[in-house]
Image 1 (cartoon, rainbow, N blue to C red):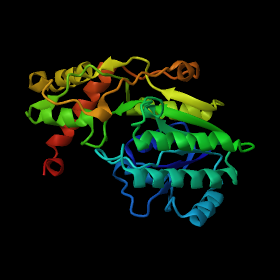
Image 2: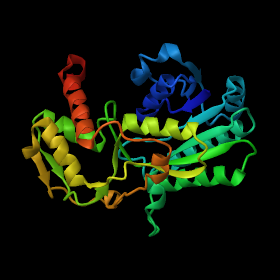
Image 3: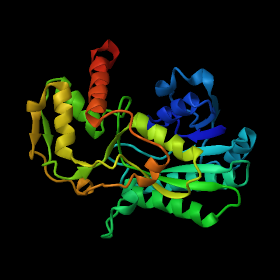
Length: 300
């Protein structure tokens, strides 16, 4: 298939591009004009790159028509650590961009679309839902309501992701880097459940969904949630510095005070399975950060 990908230079998107290429798909990517390709440096010669502002409706219409993709995976969204959950203007801009892209795809040759969503879409019911989850759900609702003839849409609810190349400010890499540098880490009690999935396995799941006929929502998760304490203890073992973890030293943060438990039944029915154990994937991730921290450029 010829597949259009947005968000291709991001953490998940770069792995999706590699998985598509591994499965012999032709890949076209829509990227911001100023996008950096650090995560796709080795694949840049194997993909077609289209600089485009997703908020520029006429430009998106023109580029999507020029590409003539059979299918698309939409990953582009505002995801700045520390602010993405509650940043109303940027989440609404991402929602608008997604709707514009959806309209362009519906008018074109694409017959399959996978929208990357979040487990947060269904977790908050008390009126204090982060706009990030609400905006993602709104895009999925719009896609479902359009019922475009010939355009089948799957909405992937992605749970917690980790792995090489992740933003160092996010939880797993932030803890791993601190421990590898010999710094103590203040954490909460770690009782809340998370379903962490290795980024390569998430990418394989998204492409598997793309190649299927699944429509509507589908959870991208392992089905093996574990307390956050166990997650960080595993990172501590991999870094040989578990004694530096200070559980209970950090106050509860409201936006993190939830359990995220998904159902992988539909995903597993497509034949998807994680490629390795959770412990093995944590070891791989910490080893990547250890090597990265030893590089002079990364250390400076």
